[in-house]
Image 1 (cartoon, rainbow, N blue to C red):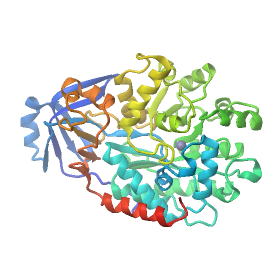
Image 2: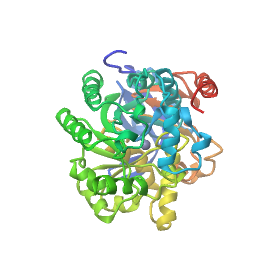
Image 3: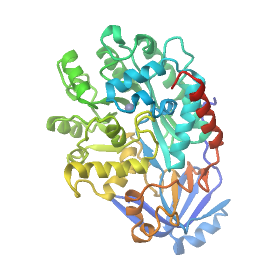
Image 4: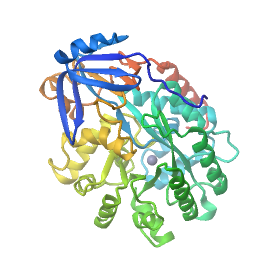
Length: 467
Ligand SMILES: [Zn+2]
């Protein structure tokens, strides 16, 4: 792998005539008939078609994309995933159990993980994200079985090959069953080895550039499989290097009980007491929160990643997203791993976020525009990426386009393009660009053979120890 992957197109591209839906300021706006000019992986102009026509044509753009039949949105940001988990989607024994039993069932499969399986399953998950309009993903990859050949680099390789922007979280588990943790001992790593590998990965792969295609975040898995010592040492390393911290937090009542019994504190106070709140931290789930927790998370500017499908699938509960937003917290949305969702569609996740908040709080609990923002600017804010999540001058040229004449959007696209994206069943994206490079065209992946990826994964699951 090269040191500096920059899959942006050096030539300029024009996207003309689209109905652009994007956050402007703190409002979502629908800009009908706009032209976007892209150069060197970033958006350099956004103007109404008439005004843009002459100047755009003068640039001699190498490609002009006709978007008159499209809703054009910023590429979606998925702030939490476990890409390798496509390997154990819908595992029969784990379909109807809650988090801890789900994990115990899956650990028994994941202990057989190998590098080829990681690369293939991650590629499938990335393909699914790109095809649904997601252009940036975080991957919390914490499963490195002892004596396995699993490498975090394989996720970076898959991301680079398929063309998605990635925050690879160097995850970790260090407390196994013999130490009172949840995973089998052979699924954990030595803490000093974990820290040394975090340093190695930061040195080799982290890119702090505002438009970076890859960053490395540091990410102990959760309070029930990592020691306080490793939480503290990881925090110190991340702050020394200026990178983000990530973990699971307050996902279930079982986790809350574990933290109370083991540490004498609930999860958010546990994290607070270990210096794990702040604007350089993002936490997945945050379902089981007290009002004090909500205030702590908002005041500390800690990022929160809402994963509604996963929370429903595992019966974990309803995260208080409306309350967090009202308190001013930074909140994004994500699909979570493919073994607890079991899909990878960020717009669908925004829709589920809206629906679930309404189950808890009525029809005004979360609005359509708020749900759209969770999937775009919300995720970008959680990842501290201020040049992602909007279609605007200076932003990364990460764009997703949906056909207005998709039957799933018919009628809705003419009624209200924003409402169509959130309230209808999200269709495949027709075209997707990441850093100005087309990765999906005519609803098909152009950077890999998606049928081959799917066939190979079906074969691996049919043959291997992952069923
Ligand atoms: Zn997760």
